[in-house]
Length: 204
Image (tube, rainbow, N blue to C red; front, side, top):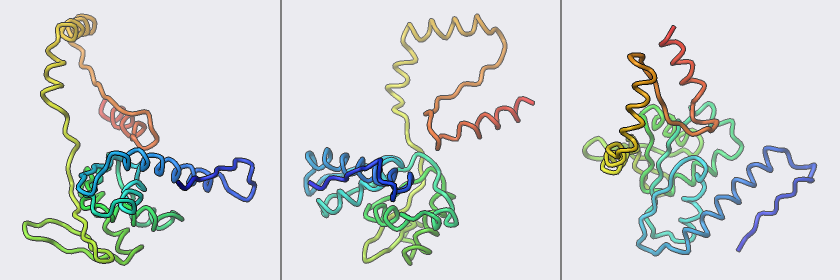
């Protein structure tokens, strides 16, 4: 197996280059785990920005496997993408998928523009208005959708007695005051600062 050697003392490497090599190594490590369980007919659903190279690595190992990708964060405009030194590697990886899904059409449009400008990919619509990208003979479907919560499991948890008791305690503590609650990952791309600014604007 190919191993990526990370030398923190290499002065010829910038911090950014070391981080990118670390990112590649992480994606290869994920590939090793998935490869151990995949077959030529596997359907693999890859999630989020921390494994954007995984589709390409998996495709190289098992070209017949069906791979899809879902991005839980926003996708930047083509003006930002074109500034990334590794833009081609990222875009080519995602274009090995059968389907790439974003949470909003704006993100799909940014991705489409980035692929057209960087890789000279072409776009077209299938019957029913399905947006597709074509690159080096491969066709990739672009979709917009939200990640669906497991409703039955969530409803079952809400109806637990300990949850109901906790809810009653919160109502008693705060009375008729309105409570704004949110669940977010503590990550750079979670948009927490923007959300807090939006709350501040709403409440002032």
